[in-house]
Image 1 (tube, protein in one colour):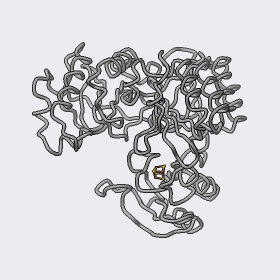
Image 2 (cartoon, protein in one colour):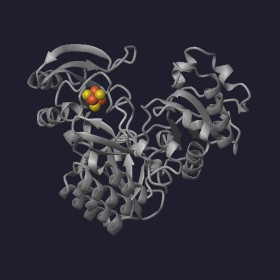
Image 3 (cartoon, protein in one colour):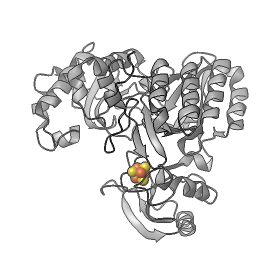
Length: 428
Ligand code: SF4
């Protein structure tokens, strides 16, 4: 792997962060590492932890796209940090491909008892396409694909520009939505990569400068124009089976007899580097040495023999990772907030920790420092949108409304927000 050119390391304030493009933030440089299918080996995890301690803040963030961020990168350490991450095999095969490695899978892909297909081989082909086809490097860094194998553990509430979802007959294809939406057709079995290739090229043929995302193009052009030349079969009637997001935490039996996965989550998606290194050791000792990041800002350790599950759960709890889906912090998410982001109107991370102590069980709340909603792509049942330090407007989910939903209260203090939520937990 070639080292990054000096120009690749110059921060571009308005750009998305990447591994080769460290973007300045209030708490220092921000480096985002895109992981193939969310997978990180124990060796890579230790390399990330070491790089974070040497050249950054020693704090890592797990993202809602199953990627990893190093915060607080010091300018004088940026080049060494990037080189260390590349040496660990975390960079793209082509530097120009870093931004487009956006393919979401279930963290339990290949192991989920409900899955219709093991999507990992196809995922590897699609990632190779995104990295290897230079024209596709012109896609927006936010343009993203989802590959759904029908797993029970699946994030089905994030809209993706292109999605494939397994059915008994093959993969159905969908655009600008989620695998619960109506697909546009069934892909001829065996033609998945060729079909996605043609579709992405067609998108680039048709999209103008104002249409970097699929929904923007479809607002201007009929879907038939985009699909012209694609060989699609009629959509089968079989629906997508239900998902069960609580499987992201705790111990759950895999397809492979005698083995389970263990899901865990650091508070609000932030993990000290020392804890990541310790989890890497646990993955080697109890599992297969891999960590899978989840799109719920957590981790999943696969292939754990069932007789080792309890010892691993205990060890993860000792590291302050939550493994209980009923724990208050398992249902709270918060963006970086004013601690690390200049746009943040409030310290959402600290406020979320204080709120967690006062919330009723089962309440899902998203604290966002501004309307950009970086920590969640869709609507949460309840959103607290910061309007000033310690002050929030409260929204409840309403998919007929844009943004976080329907505004129900304004300018609440944390105490007032906790009281409102305790009084009206089902008012969504
Ligand atoms: S939602 Fe706003 S405040 Fe929060 S991290 Fe994103 S840009 Fe910053």
